[in-house]
Amino acid sequence: MKSLKQFAAGALMCLLAAGAAAQVNVSGIKYEESVDARGTKLQLNGAGVRYKAVFKVYTAGLYLTRKAGTPDEALAVTGPKRLSIVMLRDIDSGELGKLFSRGMEDNMDRAAFSKLVPGVLRMSQIFSDHKKLVAGDAFSIDWIPGTGTVITVKGVVQGEPFKEPEFFNALLRIWLGPNPADWKLKEALLGKPA
Image (cartoon, rainbow, N blue to C red; front, top):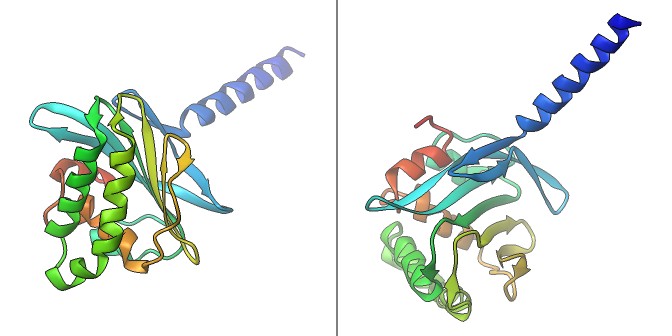
């Protein structure tokens, strides 16, 4: 009887440990090892912190259908994708939208960027409408094949999906492109140890 209780206690400890291992903690923000995107299981490819000078601005986690170790691999992965962001400090949302637009422009050739200008302007407006994001606010950018790019801010889907297939990858290049927002965050999103 005693060994059965010990076995049960050991099994419970293993289950608890497995549950605890199902999350990654980044600056106090927990990222699940896997999430569901409209019926497709995505796995956390990597997560890290965006710094501006010495200040932590936000955390980001990249979810894909399979692991990717390079920007090209991440961009080429088929199926749904998600970038989840949680703010670590207050920021003017309009400014964040402008930074995202600039990040897209800095990581694309002019002709490709010019095709996306209507979507870029609409995305900037989404963030401007929110006025301010405060520490703890979260938003996500999902690529859903057949639907488009869906932006969700504070749990609420923002307008119609962006239909252009290249729009999500243009956004992803803000963090994974040749001129990323933060080089250390780029490495972290690609699953490389700090």
